[in-house]
Image 1: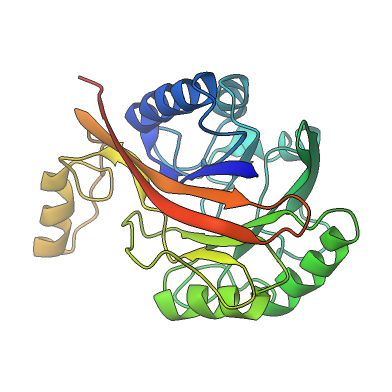
Image 2: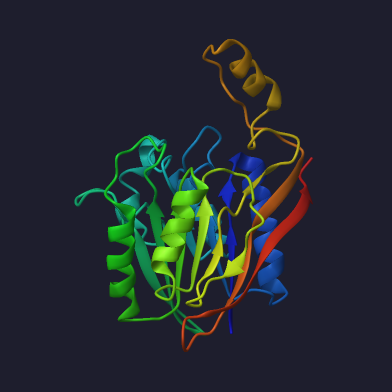
Length: 263
């Protein structure tokens, strides 16, 4: 079996530090074989920088996925084409820098990772994720049946629909973007593991990884305000999935919730 660990949206330096601790420990103990993380909020503001991407990859992360904040750090745009292990959503128009999927050789065979972004309540009007994801899954299956999909989206309905659409064609579909871990992990009828949202790697005492006070103030007066990254004890959230390397079908999926005291 391939044991794949996926960690949800990493928020700022506290989330990065805690995620690296968990990844290092689980790899060292042989609990996982392959690690994917969503890094689109890993910079102190939003987005991801080349330095942060390099740091995460050196820590043992195999692939970094992103989402609607992929481009928020200006210096990341020319970096995307140079690092194939850093993905942006596959349903961007042709010609956008970077790639939406990758296949990597591992000791347990080839593993593919795909990143796709939903459209409902999302700012960018990207190409239809259902067509893009299915077409790419069929292309990837020509090389390997082991395919992990990060579906980045706002609504539970759309992420669930993407998973149902890909059931039996990919190994796992796990959602990101809301920073709140859902409790609906399951194996679908066709053998695809699913979790609607992996949650985040960010401060427990926060609102989606940001200091609570400014976020509440924004709701109170609707005025522009900065949302600093919250610090303190961090909860690292995600999913651990067991995949049959021969068939690509998932054998199990369990939620991951680990506490790291980053104070």
